[in-house]
Amino acid sequence: MFGIDTTVLAFIALAGFSAGAVAYAFLFNRISEEQTTGRRLDTIKKAETDRTVIKANRDRAAEAAKRRKSVQDSLKELDAKQLAADRNVKKPPLRIQLRQAGLQVTVERFYLYSAVCGLLVTAGAYFLKAPVLTLPGAFLAGAFGLPRWFVSFLRARRVKAFLNEFPNALDIIVRAVKSGLPLNDGIRLIASEAPEPVRSEFRRIVESQQLGMSIPDAALRMPETMPCSEAGFFGIVIQIQSQAGGNLSEALGNLSRVLRDRKKMKAKVQALSMEAKASAAIIGALPFIVATLVYFSSPNYIMPLFTTSTGHLILGVSGIWMSIGIFVMRKMMNFEV
Image (cartoon, rainbow, N blue to C red; front, side):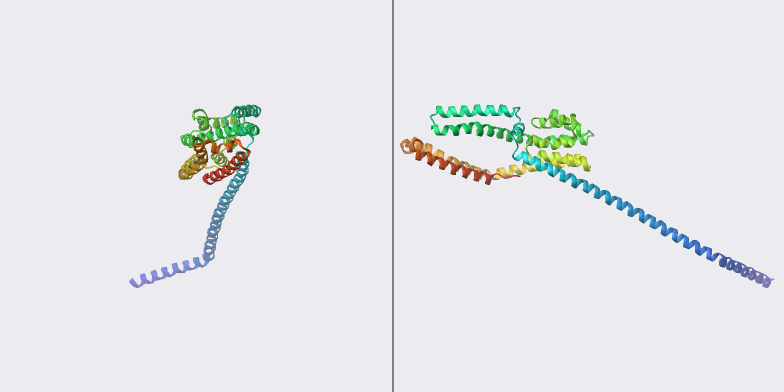
């Protein structure tokens, strides 16, 4: 019985193995084709994924190149506008100089005031018994030199007051933007609350916006009435941010920090050059002090300089040489930061 059972089991096992071998023989090609198809599908999926990644990278590169080109074009345009503005800042017409000085005076009225000033200076020189030959020079100095010097003095004082308050105004705009307010509201806040002359400059931006001009274009026009590079920086930052995007509060915060650093550098340069300025002031005042002391001690010795033609010639030549020396020392002590 044990032998029969073993034979039957062996026969059954052999029959199953044979059936499996036959089935494998018939299905081998199909299994191989399925495996090949699966590998091809995997290869196609990987290729599609690679193409998608490559396309995404290409799109990102194209977008970055487009944005870089837009920034470059914006910088070129702003550079051209800045060059034109710099020309107006260095040698502006008289009408623009009056606006930059904060004077509400027309050019015609300024010329009238200049003529009156020239007549007053000439009359003063005449009553002080100045030589007749010096009266035309007194008129030219009073009509052209003194009024324009006064306008330049007002311009410089206004620019200095603007630079002292401008970083604080930028900080206020940064806080307003960070709190969720739009840029318009920050500019309006400065235009109504900031001290002069910052308030007037930002009020011009608000008025230009009300007339239909965009904020970047209005900000770029600020150097026309405020002749300093810091005003141009503000317009450039607003223009680039409007065209290329980015974090406006961070950009304005960096600008405020740069302006404060420039102010510190100017103060440091001024402190380092004070010794040279004091020496130049002493050297420039020394001839007048010596002449005054000589006049009080022995007037007959120095009076020929003022009463003879030779003395007048000596005074004229000395004045020219002294003016050249003062001009050279001034150029050596003034640094652009």
